[in-house]
Image (cartoon, rainbow, N blue to C red; front, side, top):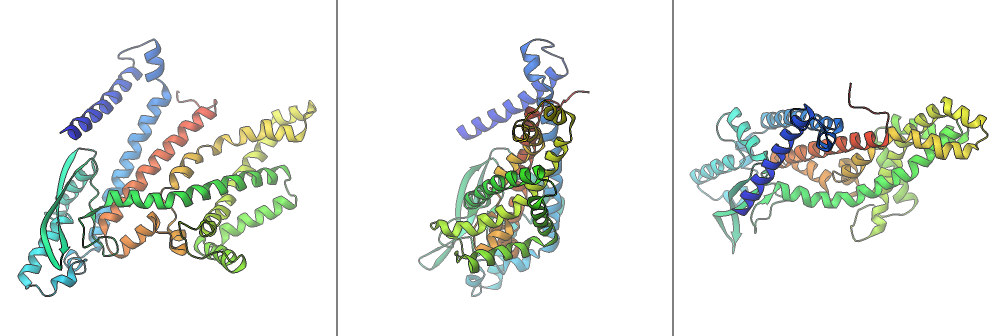
Length: 395
């Protein structure tokens, strides 16, 4: 009861806050004063509009994914290839068909396509709900089919059923729990790789811009061109060969051995720093040609001071929007990197779920990825607006 009370209270407060902001912004209430300055701020309204448009895009992506998965899945055949199919082989045909009907209901294949879609959208909406799902348990060599597992949910993304995830001796593995677990595997590698990208990419871009057409600039441009020209997967394997065969680092990731962290972290870091260096170089060259730099040189300021104090500070403004996506993106991992180095994270989960036609897991990853992207872009816009006083949100 307390879960429902707290959940509906929070939902009501969120809706009330949005309505209040719109009323203040349109000067229906609090036309002047501190409330108008705070809740009528253009950045706040801009953020709400961005969230609204982004949620529409997410909804469209969910609907397209929903129908694409169902167009490519034979649910009856899938029932016979699930984790319990081996145990079902000795059962009468009528019992197997009955259990397949239960399986269809658990997977959401009840009613027409529109009815299935409405049920799925209801499940993923942030509405408090209690879900009791039956499962098959293996206890002392006997399968029990009517055990229920009841939980409170705001978002119900379904449950995992593929053989490599679900445990025959326990209850259902919920997608939302499993995604959270896998994110915590991907995040340490991803955040370290983002740190490597920033630490190497920004200084390289500054050196390339400061010594334009010099040896550092030429080497840097050659490296950036090679990154663009060679397919990403091939480049990952090239770095893997260098680290493993050249530096004798372990080829497989082990969370308890930091040496095994280096190949995936450096592979992502060395590849991603090229894009950062490219944009830092571009923006800094633009700033070097600005009138205020020429004036600073005429006043006798040193090139180092001009670069550090003036040029870099202005050139970095367009790039600060990438910081939230780099941090939150680390939660999602890298599909190729995790597969190459054996990291059992969110990227590896997506590949396994897709191969097993575990569409609840696939849909869950799509939804979580889309929501993280929304938050990343929104935070990037807000940070950019704060860092760059030239940005205005009014006509």
